[in-house]
Amino acid sequence: MSKGLMKSVKGMAWMSSSIFMDYVINLLVTYVLARLLTQADYGEVAAITVLVGFANIFWQMGVGPALIQKKNISDKELYSAQTLNIIFGVAIFAVVNIFAPFWANVFSISNVSMLRAYSLVFLFTSYNATPLALVRTDR
Image (cartoon, rainbow, N blue to C red; front, side, top):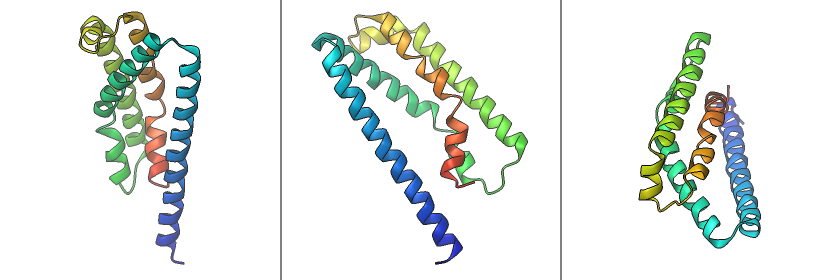
C-alpha cells in the first residue's frame, strides 16, 4: 500500500471514529436529558441547542478549513490560528449573551439564563478548534 493511500485510510478511520463517537455522546446526552428534564425544559434545551449549533457554523467557517488546506504550517501560523479561534469564540459568546433576550424571543426560550449558560460552550471549544483542525490534516 502506498504512503498516500495509508494516510488517506488513517485519516478516514480517525474521522469516522470521531463522527461515530460524536453521535454516541449526543445520543447518551439526549437520553439522560430526556429522563432528567420536564418536557418544557427539554424543548428549551433543544431550542438552545439549535441556536448554538447555528452560531457554531459561522464560528468554525474560517480558521479550521484554512489550516486543513495548508501544506506546511509554521509555529507563528499555529499561534495566530489559535488566537483567532479564541477571539471568535469570545465574540460569539458575547453576541449570544448581549442579544440573549432577542434570541430567546425568536426561539421561544423562556429561560434567558439557560441560554447564557449554554453559550459557555463557545469559550471552551475555542481552545480545541485548532488542534481538531490539525488532527484532520494528519499532522
